[in-house]
View 1 (cartoon, helix red, strand yellow):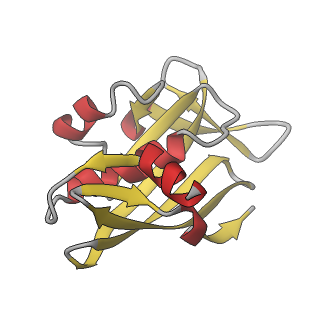
View 2 (view 1 turned 45 degrees about the vertical axis):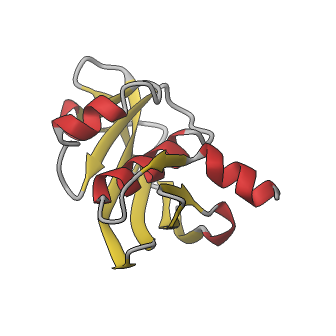
View 3 (view 1 turned 135 degrees about the horizontal axis):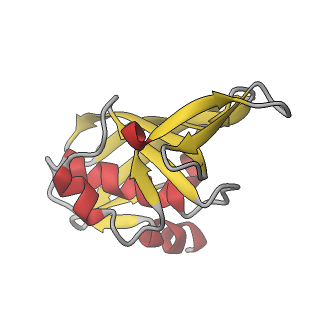
Amino acid sequence: MIAFALTAFFATAATPDSRTDATQAAIASLLHRARSSPVICLSVDGNDPDPALSTRLRDLGPWLPASSCRVLPAEHRSTIVQTTDGREAEFLSLGPVVQPDETHATIKYAWSAGKWTGHGGTLDLELFEGVWRVDPSRHRYEWVE
């Protein structure tokens, strides 16, 4: 019951073939987790989010397209992430949606605040009653630094 309530919170309406909806659900899930920087620099499948996805993500907190951010040297760790206007930030990169069937998908991600600070893994999503849901009980961390 608790897992269902959590997955409902990190869900978005979708059609079975909508990879954009699955990506939106994954981003919403990740952005609601603890983060140490006020701004997230977001990339999807190696690019800035497309305009349609950007519009959907408007209410998920402060984020910028990854092209608006850069990695710089820092004294206290080897690198830091900053926006082009100098604010501290973190990178969130999502890979492509892998959809083995109409109701299941996975998305790999990497979250980084600079070199030696970050983690990555795979999110599992399920389409339930037309809504993509991230299953937090099946979240697989694959690296932490």
